[in-house]
Image 1 (cartoon, helix red, strand yellow):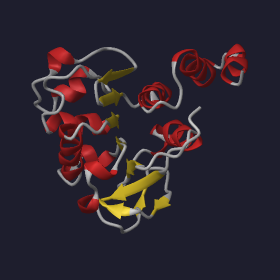
Image 2 (image 1 turned 180 degrees about the horizontal axis):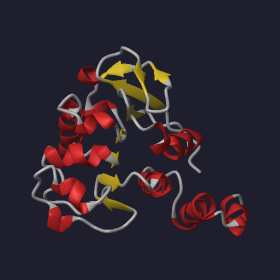
Image 3 (image 1 turned 60 degrees about the vertical axis):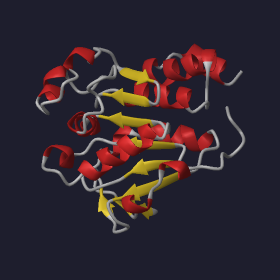
Image 4 (image 1 turned 135 degrees about the vertical axis):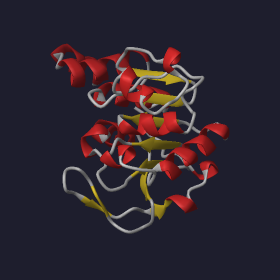
Length: 201
């Protein structure tokens, strides 16, 4: 596990109705691996998760610059499918990818990226092909039926795969690699007791 704290923090997007269960493994293990986690909201006003938790963002989206971040994580939320309120987060993801800074999106956030045109030319996954097709995007032929997909600086996953999503993020950010990453996944996804010993060896 990485022990040195990087200079740049990881940014977790938070907004009303965000699905708090989708990134728990990701942020917890990034933090345990030495990464600082900062939350970014539409403003710095508190938001409320689907689970009813109130979160006060560390900074507003307008103040977030790719050069000041190691990774942008976009969670699912009902709001992705209820209008354009979260479109600025997808636009920020474009700025991150253009700058060569990784973006990880799960569940409804993948639809936001699709609407932004960011999945038209990249292998990706999401909740289901028809869900992303409803956005009108042009990347249907690049959809991959799997738990999570990493394509360069972009990670995508569907809503039922928070552990696979975390696996891809932890691998991309260097928290675990090789056998350790596989052991971590087998422990938390498959409840494999042998993986615990491998992870802590």
